[in-house]
Image (cartoon, rainbow, N blue to C red; front, side, top):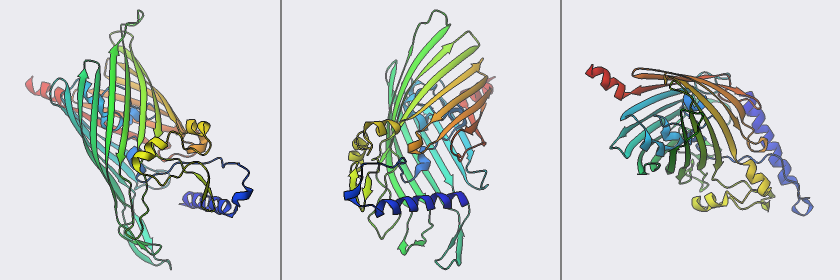
Amino acid sequence: MKRLLIILSGVLVSLSYVNAQNVDEWNGQLPDQNTITTAVPFINIGPDARSGGMGELGAATEPDAMSQHWNPAKYAFIKKDMGFAISYSPWLRQLVNDINLAYLSGYVRIDDVSAVSGSLKFFSLGDIIFTDEEGTRIGEYRPSEFSVDAGYARKFSPKFSGSVVARFIYSNLTQGQTVNGQSTKPGTSFAADVAVYYENDVYVDWLESSKVSFGANISNIGQKVSYSNDTFEEDFIPTNLRIGPSWLMGIDEYNTIRFSLDLNKLLVPSPPYRINDTIVAGKDDDVGVVQGMFQSFYDAPGGFSEEMKEIIWVVGAEYWYDEQFAIRAGYFHESADKGNRQFFTLGAGLRYNVFGLDFSYLIPTQQQNPLANTLRFTLSFDFDAFSAQGQN
């Protein structure tokens, strides 16, 4: 909590400094930090340990039960007829022990070219004591947020597929309490994802097999969120563009290695630089959702160089032995001016008959991370293997 108070104090000091300046005296110097913030950021948190072990990526990795978050178009290429997985991630475990993220995702193949999928993400913020302006305790609550969605994926050709997902988002942070004289309510939103996926076998003479893939997913295209009945202010949800390639190398019958890259960009307006409520650099961010998505490519106050800083890049690798045991590693990089999340990840996976178990571990290299030095896990179930066992 002390860290949160320090951060809040720093923000308030920065805002006071900006408002104290005179527009006519501005020398064109922009602040170093210009982080994009949104409502319900939990829906962009990577939920599973397999992708978490590769640096938090998944645009073009091999399809699995957790593809709903990363790229649901991959379900059209999944080899199994049915499967689901559940994942658990402790949050801020070095400070508190009751904040966590849980995720359930699954799919069912309809036929050889299409599949349906769904997921539920639940984020619990733990027990929080609410007090009035005099500091008198008025109650203890457990704020929480969740999203639930359903998707449909279909092959358009033997190498290319697409998908759409519909999502409902619910965020109850204040439990209906009055904050600064304003009544509050849960924030809700409806959103959609649009994704594509491509894969193709390629010949490499020194490999037994080789496959390249590419994925793109625009997620959380949806209405803004409001938490109050007394104001018309609304916040963008984290609409995100994720694109990236992946290369699977089959060294021999038992050993495979995959290298992947993801690029991410929030399709949300960059905050303009204001002095005394006058915009002196950048563009007005009080716009509609669609305009904000297009504007996000050219509205940064610092111009093209700042736009490039808004791109997060992630690299990851995954090694499998006999499709039974995996070792993973990855690196996540966000510009120091846009949040400064930079970390390495390690992971491992096991597959045994019906069950699969994945682990990941995050090692921050810059600022402290909510998942720092935390072990995350995902448990998956293969219904095809279960059915095969029942027939034997």
